[in-house]
Length: 351
Image 1 (spheres, rainbow, N blue to C red):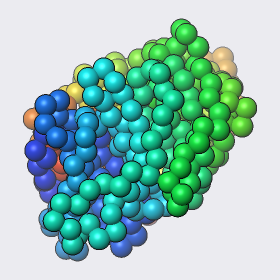
Image 2 (image 1 turned 90 degrees about the vertical axis):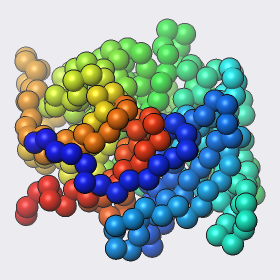
Image 3 (image 1 turned 180 degrees about the vertical axis):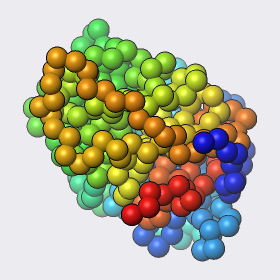
Image 4 (image 1 turned 30 degrees about the vertical axis):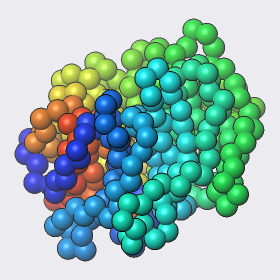
């Protein structure tokens, strides 16, 4: 099903790539986004959907000293978030806090909580465990994985462990398993690596080239979704990685990112360099798929339908975020700095 955007728009001043749901804000549907300007002072915008759901309001605008390449909101404190940033050839990562009285300040400044120093390679992302309060953070650079102990009250971050992915692997990102705080998935140039944080060792891998993004199904354990350059979207059962259990067509050009809905099982968003956001329903897999399917042939099933395609964009769409508070709402961010918030209520599965 094809359709233009009927969403609520908001324009950033500069180009941008990353947007995050403010999960810890249980009173408002909120998102954080950051800009990517090479020459100008960059900005972090705190956006809230109006009570009537008709307007995106900028509740806070904060200067950020460098280009923001990754941004993630803390799942248990709505004022805390992390960024990965660059200045020329130098990359850094930090945890920030929005000042408590930011709405009453003429020019509120972000407060530094901790700097994630120690990386010697280009930093790709910072991961928070998505399910609840957790005192650990993970940061990923092109060759290494860092596990941090974070104390937001003392404003300190200490390296607990560090491990290399190996010289032959070029890490690009990752996701933290919401069902298991010891498990993460890392994307690299030729595979998806599954790691155990207790041992800081790789325990398995999916050998697929050009995986751009991964996300875990919040409702269904052992389910991982991957976005790949040319072969679309694959859905995996982590107990049997020989073949994907299902696939989706993805996008005509690169499929850049995928996000699983936090409440509705099988609802998946994807975005790509074709300037579109697609909404998929993959729940036809069912709840009782067995990990012991026959290994003689791929059990992959081509899933339809495409519930909707939101194509009112003029640039590549790199950022996607479901609202945890209103799981029928999502925000998208195109490279030209345009934020669009949409409701998928017309496409929700009927019970």
